[in-house]
Image (cartoon, rainbow, N blue to C red; front, top):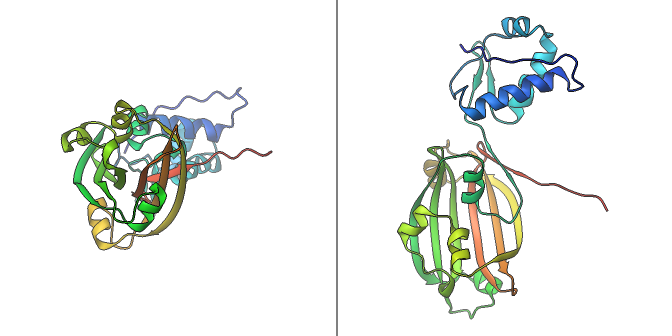
Length: 245
């Protein structure tokens, strides 16, 4: 049972529940509160903070929605591994994870020259019998499987070795090779994991996964990447900002 240190400013315009939620989230992300830790019971916690139980409950529910806490009947409230929240920008997963302070590791499952699938050849405007590089990787964040990533690239832009792909991000390697991502079309959908995907991602069979498909062009308009990534639905989300006109 853990008792996180939370200091509330009762003169602040920020609601008390949001102050509690923000400080709890910071403690989880910093590692002060670790996955598996249980919070003190709701009555003791609310009395210690001198807030009402509905106020505390609202703070906890905010973090439950973010996937950082889980409530179990007869067990209490437990910290879980936080999900990766990623903005839908033209960046690589490797760059986003590292900039967010996560420990990243990559296992290359395949790096082969293969016939381009019809949809890949069409996107890249290649002949039907063209060959491309297929790179398949398992990406881990903080030691936990997060994504199965498949990328198809023209042979001339992807001379990278397996060792390089396990040490550095694909977009970082592409930039060093003179390929600059400029525009991407991305589609996000959901389905249930196959038995193989569930096993690789450490999820139960039939668990929900997010599918992110991307087609990326460089600064001269050449399509240099088609990707199909499978993410753990319990550990990953995509943030999209919409602006009215």
